[in-house]
Length: 161
Image (tube, rainbow, N blue to C red; front, top):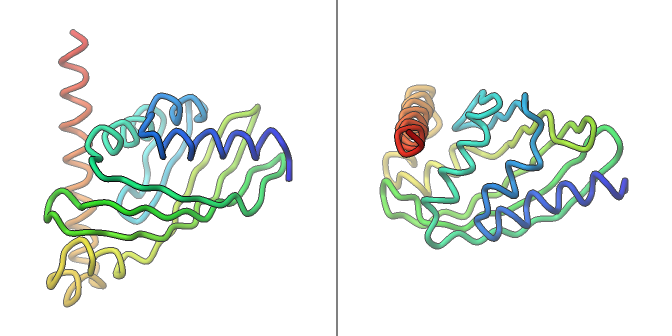
């Protein structure tokens, strides 16, 4: 494994485990692109803001990870998260595969993949079980997540002024 990329990825997830969004943000390039099934395309400050929001709202978050590959171009991390989904107060155990592209010692692209239907069954309960596989529910979750991120970022912006 490439030592610098391996350390970069470990710094990112160690920060997440501590709920230290600033440590995570420091691993990202200014123009980073993040994507996952809930937040399909976040660029730059919106990507960093998502981690700030998740860390700020997490009360019972537990993270475990394993760096599976790290080289000059990027890496791959298998990680798991245990937490309470705030909208429903349901327990979630999510299993995620993160893929990373690295340039100049920073993450420029971060793509997380997980089984959305599995996640929705846990997070949304009966609705997720019955409808979590449908594009309608997927889009609704994405829309609500985007609105939550917008509100969080707006609140941070207002506190700085």
